[in-house]
Image (tube, rainbow, N blue to C red):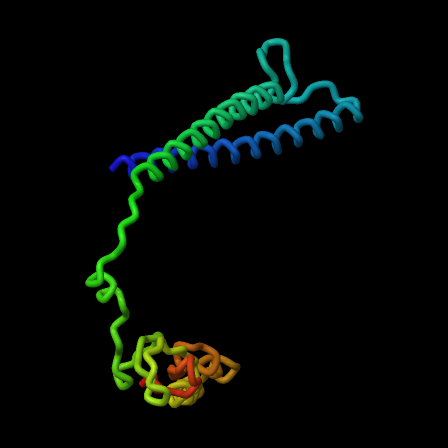
Length: 195
């Protein structure tokens, strides 16, 4: 439970850091733009702009931006320090509470993958006993064009997809047959058709 609370707190710190970084980038972009505009106005002999200080205002927009950037930088430093402290505390807690326990023979036997019959193979790799080399292996799969691809191509031609769309079944693995191969002897164990 403590780890979940720590994780939630770390996520909140990350979110606030992300917000601060993005806000600082926005403010720095705005500041750069205002400084360029200020230089342009001075070069062209303009007197006043809305972002420059007027007598009745306390701070100009540039000064407000610089002040906000300073506040955000201080908060970012605080959050980074808190994040470093939290991560070091978490590491200490995890290392002190971690115990290594060897699995029992029953647990080891239950974690071994279940051997599948060759005729029951699906579209994903599985553990089988190779009929050629008699070894228990996890099959490698390849996708090959089969009857389904041709059928869908002809069907799409009949529906009017002649401009190249009819060739999609030849390029998408979803419409191809799945061939299982033995990684040891490289023989084809079984082909699973799409239809």
